[in-house]
Amino acid sequence: MTFKLYDEFKDQFRSLQATVWKNSVDKGFWSEGQNFGEKIALIHSEISESLEAKRETDAPDNMAEKPEGWGIELADAVIRIMDLCEGHKFDLIGAIEKKHAYNLTRPYMHGKKF
Image 1 (cartoon, rainbow, N blue to C red):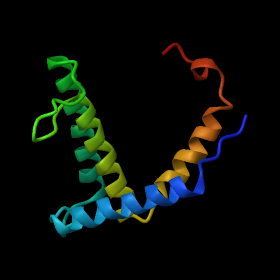
Image 2 (cartoon, one colour):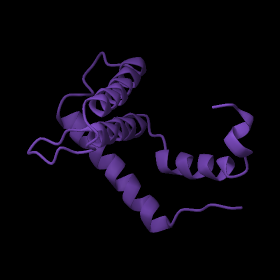
Image 3 (cartoon, helix red, strand yellow):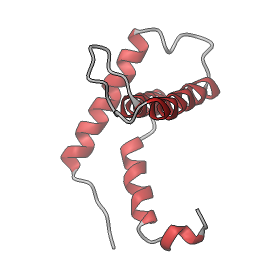
Image 4 (cartoon, helix red, strand yellow):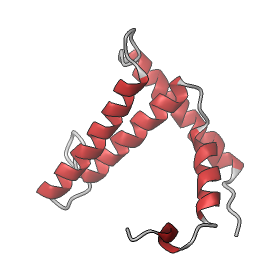
């Protein structure tokens, strides 16, 4: 089984990743002193916020003026991942495509219990 993303989608993803990074720079999230570990910790915090939001309500988005909910927090994690990858000139969508193609070849549950 093979897997290949459309070039137009990949181009749009890369453009969004660059836009996310530029906004992060403009908002001061790439000031001196921030390191890779801090960026990973911020990604982790968004995922933890998603878990806490899910524990409070099942709504992925509260549909309020300020988006909140477990799904929105996961979106925040993706945004932070895109930001980190762009800041380090890493082709995230290329890596997703490559890793998913590999995962298609793996056994059920990757041979694990969970």
